[in-house]
Length: 321
Length: 99
Image (cartoon, rainbow over all chains, first blue to last red):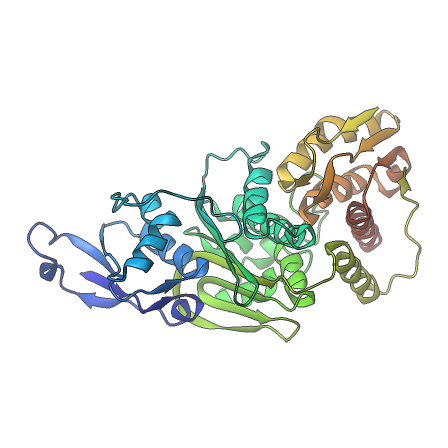
């Protein structure tokens, strides 16, 4: 049986929320392509966001059989997909008829987060720096928000997904927003959490999304024991990301298998059933008009955390020199 | 003992595994010997909280919260100070919870 994904004009978050596979007869593609088992029709595409592209990329990568892609008819859309590296990463349509210009201030091309990345090298630092400097070249305060959120997302993929991921970013001048997406076709958040005996009976992607955005929660340790003595993971990556988005009035979307988590600024998150995504996709949007500094926001989060725990004891002295 | 985290100007330390490596190879062994460790944050504009937790909180939970007296944090900008404070607070909460 073959399947078809019919891409609309806008390949973005809204599309991912409603994505479905249609049954398809590959014989209509012509001779020699009868064995195509996934057909991506991008003919009508006019506009793509990092979320849509990373999501579609991982959909294609997760597919075992032969995949065929139909190019967008609109030249602008086709050229954007070439420039952002969508076709190169999939090793299709290598015909380029343009000279690349520096993308500083606009977008960061799709980059693969490979299983071969040595987590203890500086590759993760370089990857985050590349993205932040491209989408916010002249705004150091804003760069720090992007660096911080990006780092939490990349650490998450490296520690939990057991798969290869892809990331890209775009700055939208009209709305002064940055969208950064990172996706993998790994085992999903629910499976990751189940490594922790405390969550071994978890059987819902929706519950997994809610749990994963709480503080001090991870699949890599049992929170009833001492989690940090020999592990790198403190179980707070998605929690910090959620809190930054909340404080900065941004947007956070997480797709993991059949679950979708959406947060709009400081409103209560909405977690609902979604069409199946073959891995995890995390997307954040931040607005450059937000004027606070990362240090101030971290202090707010820390103070909230302190009051939630109702701890009255003073912190031990920290020796800053 | 002196730990220089980076010589590359304007670094944002993101990868938590790198923090774990410095903790395992340098910071914890020195503390266990009773040595004072000066951690130099020159050239560091910031870190992810995961990096800082792997470095500071992990050490305090491994060696005990009192081991903080062996660590001197040098040349920290306001953001780095805030990230360190948050990590120490997390370690304190954890140790109280465990007790």
